[in-house]
Image (cartoon, rainbow over all chains, first blue to last red; front, side, top):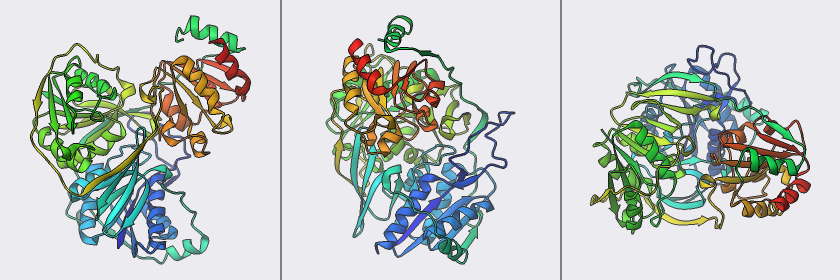
Length: 249
Length: 309
């Protein structure tokens, strides 16, 4: 079975985000970029399926600027077999990304698609579900456990209040939550080996998808800052303030 | 213009998150309808019809919708959605699972986690873990939206008298099956609905020490939460996690105990009305957002606080 996994190039999660002074967007100039953390978990899960003999090939796909090749090479160093970059310098909204991925899936015919549940830049949490709708596949979102058996996959999902388990008929789409696995680090020999793995570049035009804007970003602002309050000297003073000043107890 | 809200429910009761979505819909303006899709869920429809500001309840009561599998319910919502200007759900795990699937079927975008309504097509939403707020205009004819509950007050659960209309359309995609669920049992209020929350972090040291917080919470009628550090350390289960990757909460009173205040945690609780921090490290970032900070050893301060309430 072929497993297709997607990775997104985003701002490194350790970098402090700054809003541009003209409020047009977040400032990404000279900022360290990295693979979206939820996508790292997706790559790890795909590679583990291959190591367990469940998957025969792991194909990794990214959509974005040419520089996203770096994240594809990282995924190849982590154990993916082959990369595809759908290259575009335009702003690709979730629905467009899903349409492009649906075309890639049409060509590749994977049995399982593993994606991060959301990217830490736009925090949309949409693409996997949209791709599932467009391909008519079932979806196991926010996965904390994935078990493949025969033509079914059982996915344990992190839902409000606990865990839910669903069984999906493959081909299916899984989106990863934080506790699915602990991604490995790439070893130096594997980083060197990854440079020789195949990486193919396509464009939205090649795939026959028109890039369309469904939304318009009007402005981006820093969030309202909360002011620090006071330090109290004792539990007694705290209780007094909560009762008589804040009046919340 | 009419707005369709997808009810959050468990076939028995209407969940509070639905009421925040009703307020958001009222701010957009227009007729507000609620869809209750489930099985044996008449009681939910009755509750929805009593919500102030709702003019109609659509009840799709069928075995195919029992566990609200996105594969089935999305087909129903996409069919109904073409009659509406907006389709809205709370940004709960159920809403987040369902709505992008609906949006794609309708060939429109989705606006996730909306915290403010500016006009019928323009909304604010947090990006980059709440470190920036984007104002976004939808260019689509049908706006598919999930609402972050902390951005909107709850609509009154009583006072309305909407008509209930049965929806007979049955959609069963036949590609997914519910196997089971493990829900955490608790007599305390749910985190996202609680007016007081007591949360513990890595400073708690271990899971047993959370008993200190539970005792305090029971006196205050509070829910108990945790930081990601406490969850990752295995002290408590992950459904207790407050933060960008866990629950987003905004209670009247939030008491952070032994929590340093990582950005990821602050993103989940900084909209609380009053924040109290108890931490022995006076440099902890949590103090920069706390209304009342107490620099003290939590193992002394929490029992003392418990005793004084």
